[in-house]
Picture 1 (cartoon, rainbow, N blue to C red):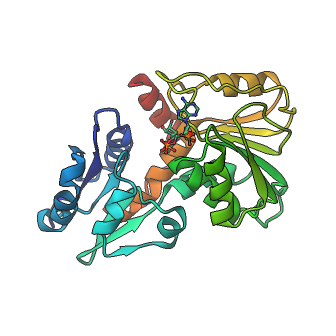
Picture 2: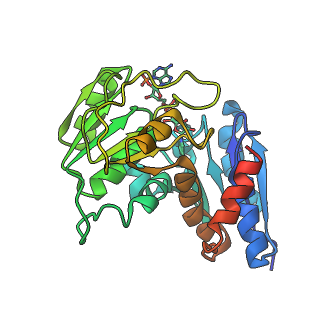
Length: 275
Ligand code: NAP
């Protein structure tokens, strides 16, 4: 059998943590496979994607700036990819190039057990989402599958937030990035608070104890938002949970076996050591 090879494409790609995650799981399973890091310039995207088949790769994760542009080179796009309008994983399936969006599953993973999505736990009556970019789209698609009642989108470009709610058929409203209103769940899906970026220009006074606050930014792990939420007695979820969660279905698709998830703590330590 040929060695299963997958990888990640982006431009630049040096920052990607995907190789650490996939190689950790390969080693845990004792699986003889490879996971590479491939810098692909925008003008080479089509050739690189067509080359996956020719090279016998199992597939690739796709990161900035290719998540939307890659779609035109694919044979099929899964329902989540179509709903989000972007894919973060391309899998070669019986010779066909299939696009998937695993960010939605990654976002939802740590919310299971907190909110029900139709099950026994509490429903999300009101969610606040900061941001209206690519990641926010995946977050909103995820919230829709959980049956969220109402969403307030806070974004620098308010019209983008309003358009997104409209496009996804979600009840709620869009506002500028300022005060966070009271909600069951608050998600930061902007790039703000990330190392090298300005802090979130929002007041957190509206956060109530017991609310769930989720920052999908993972560098630093403890963002100012999460620190404020912890101080208020909120339940917090950090961005590494989504990062590892989105990698899991991609790993299963590439290597044909689910990754072992009983040592996520060791994986998180490894990811933080390289941060
Ligand atoms: P994006 O499409 O470029 O969107 C960026 C968002 O941040 C937009 O809402 C943008 O507002 C806002 N923003 C950027 N700079 C701003 C500024 N100076 N002031 C105010 N707002 C600003 O990026 P993305 O792909 O959605 O990624 C967003 C974040 O999510 C990144 O930090 C990324 O690392 C993280 N992420 C994490 C995971 C994970 O697995 N944990 C997965 C995907 C993404 P405008 O609309 O007004 O431009």
